[in-house]
Length: 375
Image 1 (cartoon, rainbow, N blue to C red):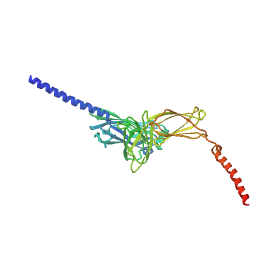
Image 2 (cartoon, one colour; image 1 turned 135 degrees about the vertical axis):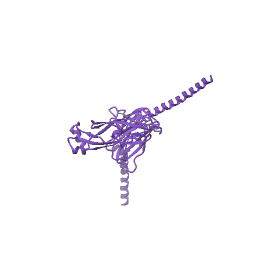
Image 3 (cartoon, rainbow, N blue to C red; image 1 turned 30 degrees about the vertical axis):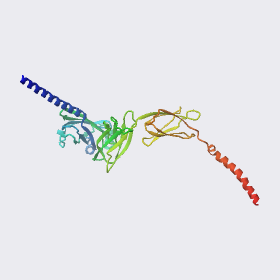
Image 4 (cartoon, rainbow, N blue to C red; image 1 turned 60 degrees about the vertical axis):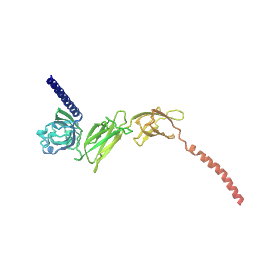
């Protein structure tokens, strides 16, 4: 009996150990699904010298540099890389790259937490392209695009990851990273906001995490312009131009998103009739200016960020209306504004003119009398 009890206890211990191992295994799978590798194109260069050697060959050399960032808790191996090259939306080449056969310079094993560079230099035939596209390529005016998928061998099997970014002719081999922090007006983080960094060389998209951060690695510099766009449903979209140049590239930006408010402004004259084409302007140091003209009914409808403004309404022939509004604390949906007619020249200065005439009529006779007496 005691032997059976000991066997039963041993069985329970084994079940417990197995459950713990299974839990850690499931956790590892969860981490693996969340922490995907990142594969981006960090350089794309076209060499047309092959075409000049033999026009019949109609071939060029393209050098593409892929950057692979691996955040796993285990080492993984690059199994293969499949990608397609387009010029002006025309398919130029389809490639499947086995790093073991074609790229002897790179180690197939990618350590966790490391960034690995993979360079490929395919000779690409232009025989199937039309003359116009070939001429654009030879003149350096073609719009290039690369789309692909990378496959990694992990402990959980083969994992596929899309190649991020479409990039051509980076201005420099130097790279930097930047963090975009998205916050509301109270500086609370905004998660799941779409953050886009784009230039004539590439376009990258990310969603902000629970801390409101979107992290971009391996950006090139110096000397080009980035366009930063941030958007989320219910918030007014944000856009900013960023100059990337030596000696220090931008390392981070805080983007403040404002909730959208919809306003209806009705502009009337003193008789209550609508005023057409009156300029309704909301000016703010935080978000800039928003202007709209009133329609045939004297109404201007605007969608603007919910913050503080100076509201100005103007129309030729009327006195300008101005008011300070804080829509973040005291939101409104509609407002009726009456403009008073602008005074004519005579209406503005008639009292001064009449007073001057009266003064002249009184003073001149007195002066004349005094002169007569002195004589």
